[in-house]
Amino acid sequence: MRDEARKDPGQGPAPAIDLPERRRRAAGGMGWIHRRWVRAGLVLMGLIAAILLLPALLRVQPDQLSDNQWASPSWDHWLGTDANGRDLLARVCDGARVSLVVGLAGSLVSLVIGVSWGAVAGYVGGRWDGVMMRVVDVLYSMPSILFIIVLVTAVQGPVVGFLESVAGRRGAEAAPVLFLVVGLGGVSWLTMARIVRGQVLSLRQRPFMEATRALGAGHARLILRHLLPNTMGVILVYLTLTIPAIVLGESFLSFLGLGVQPPQASLGSLLADGASQINPVRTSWTALAGPGGALVTLLMVLGFLGDGLRDALDPRQRKSGHSEG
Amino acid sequence: MIRHCILRMMAMIPLLGLISLLAFGLVRMAPGGPFDQNRAPVSPEIERALRDRYHLDDSFAAQYLRFLKGCLVGDLGPSLKYRNHTVVEILAAGIPVSAVLGGLSFVFALGVGIPLGFLAAVGRRAWGDWLAGTLSLLAVCVPSFVAGPLLVLVFGVRLGWFPVALWGGVDHLVLPVITLGTYFAGRVARLVREGMTETLRQEFVRTARAKGVGEMSVLLRHAFPLASIPLLTYAGPLLADLLTGSFVVENLFQLPGIGTMTVNGALNRDYPLIVGLVLLYATLLLVLNFLVDLVHAWLDPRVRHA
Image 1: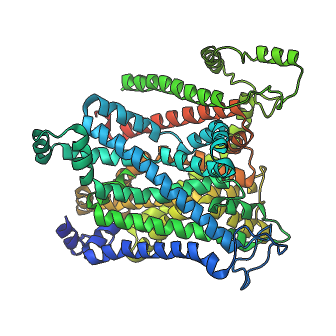
Image 2 (image 1 turned 90 degrees about the horizontal axis):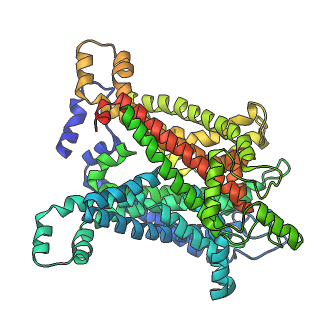
Image 3 (image 1 turned 60 degrees about the vertical axis):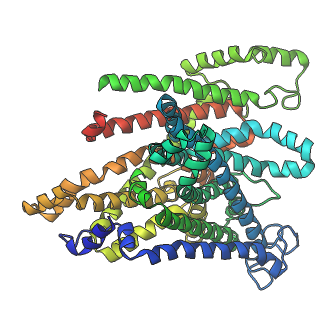
């Protein structure tokens, strides 16, 4: 396929024909592909370091109140201050940290559900496979955000009460984050399940599976030790692609006031704060641009990392992944 | 074909039943009733009468059956927050607003996305790629709740070209539609570009050119219909996304649509309203997906016989 791609540019019958980006990338040689995700990964590490270290270096605290409200950016407060005189840069770093933690933990939840669902469906096969994949199809056609909203509405009260009785005030404060992690992870596993099932279905037919079964390996051992390790690359790629989706979902819900609750901040709730302060008299640009810029940068870097990893680790999905859209 | 349609429609009924059972059950699981002492302090006799009136002391199964019966005659119960209105009345007030917003955004997404994707595919590689790349990046990375407030700030407050919020004349629609539609325009442009580049590489395009068909005709009459099939597949999820996307946009611009109602219903813990909205969204999406499948089967004979 790669040879074909190399010949294609010269062969094209008309200049109007444009090659898909991925083909040209493949034609350019492997080094570039590798560099792409490596670079995205490096930028991401830099971002995380900045999120963790910047407030400490600048000696600003996210929840230190002051009388200095809506200050313009200055050397003391790089992004100015918010309605309660808190340093906005520290708040943005704090919010980005919460968003990232929710993104990581949520994608781990989706990893566990998706991989087990897909692996079991593909391994068992037959009628059960059909039933399990029909469930995935049906869930695909639902607006998943609505599920989370219903979940938050109906179940939050008792869970907050339970956590408060177990872990005190800290438990009650952690509840919204927990809800976001479980809720968003619980609706984001569908693609992962489909991909893992496809992989397991094709691996199941291979001779090495037959051989392992002949040696007397049980079902659990076959799945855990032989099938899943062979799908690791794909799983890693989709894990990486799930993180930005969950970060986006978290910001979305927090923006609407259904996610992270004050005094905790996330990028979404900071944006909501900024948006609520738009007025003709005086508007703080940085209250919107700060968290907005952080979110856009974060999503972009995570997206690049996922796409780059997909190109590097999962060449087959490059072709079919897009057309499935 | 007709049998297939009927089967598909029959399959929707148990699915809707399941969704309603889930929503109803989840909401009944939540603590507190609408006539608890701290919510609406009334004397015990009145409370008993009210609970009796709304059958709150019946078993879960009986309540659910009564709810289902109500659904069949178009009665979803009273709203807890807006005491004088039924859920159906509230939904009926919100649906036109959301439909206009969603419909216009759909038109915007296709109207901007298709030409852009088309140009990106057939135009010269350098700027075509740049355009499609920038748009798809924009689509993925600038969510509506970042773009919306910035648009309001620039065009609403600073320049004063458009009203910043509320529902009224046509000018009230400009910013919400752009906010909601831009993301999807990017997605559509990307799909059209990929579809066109794939299609233009196929043999029948070469044949058409060899026959002497004009370039415009090759692009529009031969390549584009085939290239637009992925777009059609995306139309179902697109409409779903337009519906959920409107949560943010309606909330941001304070439009009285069902997106705002969903968020307010969740914030106010207005359970019957939430159940009604879940059912509404689920029905809408199932029907839309069904229609998309029908059109798909009609366009592509291979699907019809699968």
